[in-house]
Every structure is written in C-alpha cells, then in structure tokens.
Image (cartoon, rainbow, N blue to C red; front, side, top):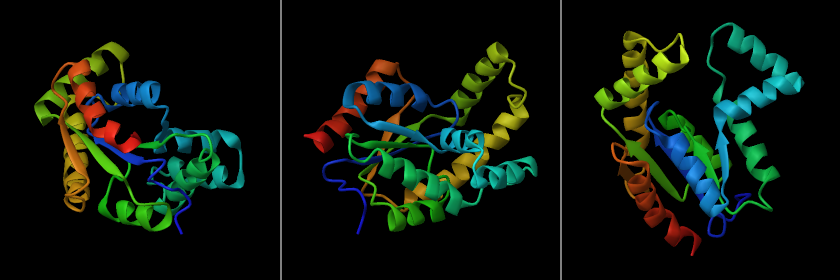
Length: 194
C-alpha cells in the first residue's frame, strides 16, 4: 500500500541537467501550487547537520568521496514525504532519480510517479550557463572540462531513466525565457490538481 494517495497529492519528478533552470521553475511551482520541493542534496545536508547516527555514517561516506547508498537516500525521501503528507498539496522530487534503478526503487517503496518533467537544453547551452555561473561565483568545480564530464555523466544516466517512462514523460525546451517555460509547466500540472 502506497503511503501517499497520488490522485490527491501528485508526485512530480523534476529532471534537468545542471544549469537547466529547474531550480527556478521549482520555486515558481511551489509558489503557485503549494507543492513541497524535496531535493535529495538538501535532505542529505540537513541529515548530516542533525548529528544523528545516520549522519555520522553519511559524513564518513562523503569524506571518502563515495556516493551515498540509494537505500539511505530513499529513506530520507520517504521520511520527508510522510512527514509532510498531511499538509502538502503535492511533491516535487528534484534531481532524482539519477539512475534507472533509483526510479524503480522509488516507485516500489514510496509511490508511483504522476508525471516527469524534463527540462531539456543542449550540452552547449548548459556548458555556457555553468561557465557563466562559475565566473560569478568562483566555484572550483566549474571549469570547462569538469563541466563537460558532469554533463556527460548526467545525460548518459538520465537517458536510461527517461526511457523507462515514455507515458509519464513531458519534455520541456528549457532554452527559452523563464515565463514561457513556466506556462508550459502549468499546462502539465493544472490537469493533475484539477
């Protein structure tokens, strides 16, 4: 039995490469629809700060430069969704799943996804945006070679994720003005909340 009735509280996976502008769109969705925005990165950072037993384990994994096991990420997502299930109008799961097995595990353990919004932009566009961001913020991980590698890793895995959900996938051209993109987002979400 899924802990969430997705007919009343949709679960939306929001996917897009780094620099695709999905963060901006998530903010706009939260403001308009009252959905809860859950980013696995934020959940992990909050857990590490909490000082729990699990936090100690996470800190050790991250210090070794390893990826956090999917079971832990799923547990954090599930706990966050259940904690907010009463008051939330729906859930935006940001930047997850990053690989095929994560999508399968999410649907088995939490709930089926209602729709997947993929903010699509070319590697060239994303590279230019990230280089611009790096220039203004001085982020060390944002030189051109690193960026290209990050994008390739993302796109290779993401294609496998998207291929599993042809019926639920909505692709949005993210190389347009923010308001044009959001108009398309609304055309996808309005029927879900009607």
